[in-house]
Length: 441
Image: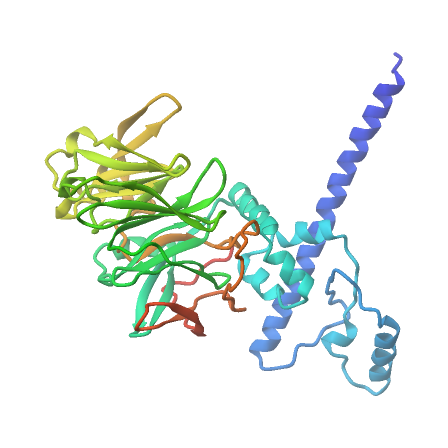
């Protein structure tokens, strides 16, 4: 049997590509192991109140080796002759790695470690804060682990501050009867970004609790009826939508890519109460659209497509006609990126209506649902499900990406709020409140 030269070259290429992939995986595995050992060692030393010291086997991987390697070797040998144990900085072995390999390692680490690694150098800080790494880190989490969610609750700590608290997935059912703040609202969370606003304040805040980056938005003046937050699944742009006013209802949209508010709709006259979204329920973001329960009429659901920024209505499930929305028994939520509606009076083993959508049609399907095995609201109005990511409320394409407020710790933040204007200042204090331990990704 004879082979052409092209086939032989192709076989060799496939053979070497496979070997290169295996070598790459082995190198990444070893580097991640060394990172884990180093972080565990330093954490143990800090817990014991000792200054971190490295053993001979400790390896710290850096992007660029220091230029004074000869001087460092001289100091290390001098300390060994004097009988002193060399410190971590004096025995660190500098190994130069390609930027591509460093990025491959970083995108596989949990967010809480990446926030700590920003202090290594300006280069690492710039890389970890880049939109490019945040996007790759997010996609890898979705593909390998799925976006593991925990409950986040925003509460008023003092008259001039609000506090962020984390809870595990298992604590979701405990929130059914929880009391929520009368003024604080968390209309949603998307890819690690959380939207927060107060009914008595003009401002809307976008923040990433893991990285501590906060952004303040100032919408046009008017009484906020409802605020929605989500992502345009076509362009990948995050958007904030505000319904405001009572006599004439208006709609404005903030695009994080263009950094501008734009007026979308304004009614010609007064709106009936049945056509106004209820303030007692936060909107639900599902598959690129926002969904609202109407105030006193559950015959229809208000829908806004974040790509076209157009409204439409959706008919309710058939057996929900006799249930009053104002009673608080009707809930909408997102499960596996599908809209779900249920009557919570039926208990924990209830029927749930799921909206099934395709390119040509959409319909409701009823299914038996065991709530104990799933993440299920009702959440309080100041709570949302939150994923730990690096996504920033600022985008590199923006012309005004300045003034971001950051902190190095990555678990929870306490923000100062000006009592006169409602403006949120920089974090003033670290406040951690976790009901159950969070497992790292």
